[in-house]
Image 1 (cartoon, rainbow, N blue to C red):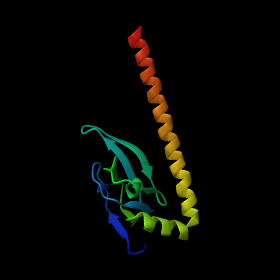
Image 2 (image 1 turned 90 degrees about the horizontal axis):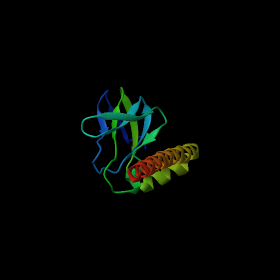
Image 3 (image 1 turned 45 degrees about the vertical axis):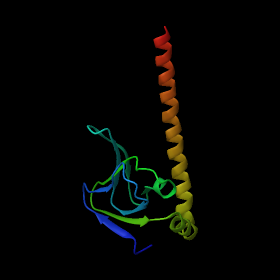
Length: 131
């Protein structure tokens, strides 16, 4: 994986929402901001640092990227372009594999929390509308 290294400078866009590139990144140096935009407003939803990863969903789904990833300073990233490469990397790096499972479980739990909150909000609005 040593050959698969890329560098970005502050404010450079690493991933653009809406694109369909299949690539996962691991941060070797620096920080990356993950953000969502509605065209007018940009909201930073995560700040990732050395050892963190992003873009993994693109390896499994051929769907457009859901968020932007922007270098928050000078950044050095390793990247993985296929599920096969990811499997090989995880077998060689079991500590990272365990970390990845833990982080993905945290992200899923956070998503569940947001969905439950939105469903509750919709139910409250429906009750108010019916009154």
